[in-house]
Length: 341
Ligand SMILES: [Zn+2]
Image 1 (tube, helix red, strand yellow):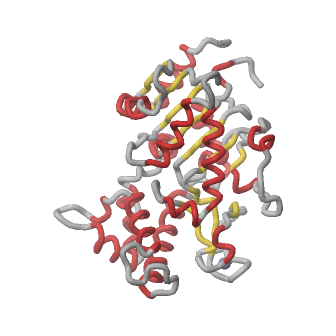
Image 2 (cartoon, rainbow, N blue to C red):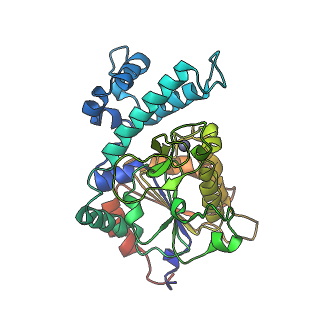
Image 3 (tube, rainbow, N blue to C red):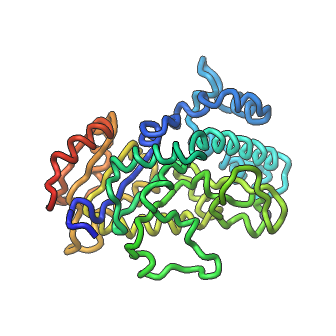
């Protein structure tokens, strides 16, 4: 524990803008265009994007990655189809192939550079400048699929610590302060699951072990695929129950948060899961210690802050600060914060 109250019970909420700034990964809106060569090399995926997302003078690859993932998930779910509920219908199998191809493209793009010791040390350095020295009372919630944060500060990503033979967490384990939690709420390219939805192993998420290459499910022999989900897909929680566990831990941590730092996440009002989650910062009870400060790091910080403020309780007195980028945050935050609050 540190004496610096600024550094305790902080929840960091990290979005695509942060990994764009730190690692140079594309934003969700420019992602497909950035991967044009890999997409064009996959005929099924390319044809699907052209068929579903091109038109009226705009390129299919201008589509937002999350919109495309949500579109595919709705098809896989059988929305509006006569084959609703049939796992083996040819149209569904076709959608599954397209989705697997898209996951390959995402995994390849987001793995760039993070296999080497040198670049992971550089990424860690960049994040640590903003996150500071995390303690076990701190939490990092990320909506990003890349694993650049996984290298930071000895955090515990849940996929690695869940023991499948002990299928519950105790309150002590939830609150344990030995290491900060790292919660990938929309999955990660490091979360692996069986690609065969009829396999009993398909609901489990396993942490990827070292080295890249194909993984084969030990239960059914199908290829393993990465587990990532677009926002606002309730079905995702049925497919990957572990993500509900991550959401529960995030909620518990937000209830007691003293400080929230939102970095590169736009807090879209249409993402109802996130709205539900963030209202937890209203506190657990009338006399619970409330949130003291919100820092927003974003080129459009004022808009993000305005969206966040409507989630606060009436009369909740919380200091709000905004920063145009992480460089500004690092220089101003360090000079503004008293060493011992
Ligand atoms: Zn399997």
